[in-house]
Amino acid sequence: MNLEIIKSKTVQMILQFSIPSIIAMVLTSLITIVDGFFIGNYVGEEGIAAVNIGLPILYVYLAIGIMIGVGGIAIAGMSLGAQDIKKSNDVFNQTVISVVILSVIISLLAYMFLRPIVSFIGMDRQVANCFNNYYSFMIMAYPIMILNATLGMFIRGEGKPQFFMMISILTVVCNILLDYLFIQQLGFGIKGIAFASLISLLIGAFSMIVFFTRKSSIYKFKKFKFSKSVLRNTVLNGSSEFIGQMSMSISMFAYNWVIIKTVGVSGVAAFTVVGYVAYLFSMIIIGFGQGASPLISFSYGAKEIELSKSIRKKTNIFVFISGVIFIVFMLTFSGWYSSIFVKSESVKILINKGIQIFVLSFLFSGINTITSFYFTSIGKAKESAIISLSRGLVVLLICIFTLPSLLGMLGVWLVAPVTEAFTIVLSFILIRQNNNFCRVNAQ
Image 1 (cartoon, rainbow, N blue to C red):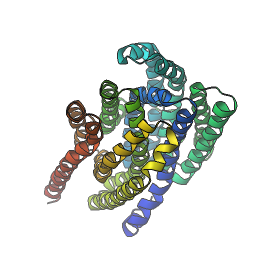
Image 2 (image 1 turned 45 degrees about the horizontal axis):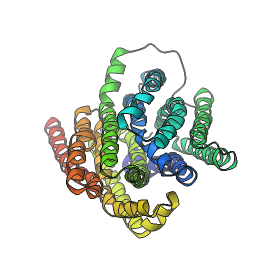
Image 3 (image 1 turned 90 degrees about the vertical axis):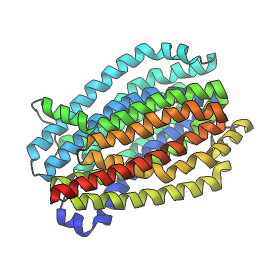
Image 4 (image 1 turned 60 degrees about the horizontal axis):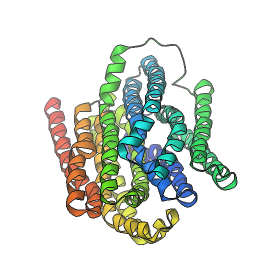
């Protein structure tokens, strides 16, 4: 990275780093959405509900993986900005090994708790069968997914986001083709969806491992000395992401429990399909965040505080515009969208009503996400954690357990807009406090 180029071409650099990342994240989300298409059309709403009920399992993996990955790349990026190449490379190796070990441990624990989850939720027989068939494979696929996400962060940190984009394209194409083969041609059912994900993720992992063994210029697989201080700082820097993803795990479990009690399986299916929109939008926002984060970390590490602020502000403009575009598109094509995934008219009605309310959260969620990324990138874990706790746990759970009980399914759709609107006020307060702190220290 070149500091002068970042200063003179800030917008171009944000887009240069973000667009490949956005494409990669959108392609990653398409795996889930395409899976949803095949499940909805060839398995039914019970399959969609089963996958969504198990999403808290995925968020546990993401909590650990993203915490280590984001925390590690932030330290590596600041070390790179300070021209300490050896430390940066050591952080890379320690981060990758830590992610692999922790995600395998999670898989072993998840295998033990699959059946107790079925009993606790109270799934009917058909949903329970889909749940067990799908997640018995996915707990093998998720560690590979987390490894891929971590390696992708360091590929972007090396300044080669286009390469990660190409790997993501390869992974998605493989997943779509395998979904078609296993579901439509071979009739494997929901197991085929999971198996397709496992194989496509392995292909992506192999491609990235080849990159780091043969083509990378900074980060390479080498022997390293394990550092407790680096691990501690990695966990602290990524703590907000851990809180955010664990909060999503808890809140998704609460969502499903409340919806099953309020509406039933059809409500869970409708919420899942609307959730695909939110998932796609969040991947775009995360793409912007992952693209801007190395620039922010590098600028902050080089003592260019105002430049790091400028990157954040410009990125916020991009995510706000993206939110408006998403809202207009979904309000216009909600009927067409719902018909892609489900055949039941009652579920389609639930989806169409939900989209009209739920998407309003996109006006705020992008800025909240980028603000959290910003604080993580400059090593302000506490501020980032506060934002993540608000939008992912505290305010969210209050809304989940109050609004649906008062307003039924309407309350379910209102949870996200109310939570994000409250959190954006908190984000602005934390940004102002940080600006005042930087101003005082500069004097």
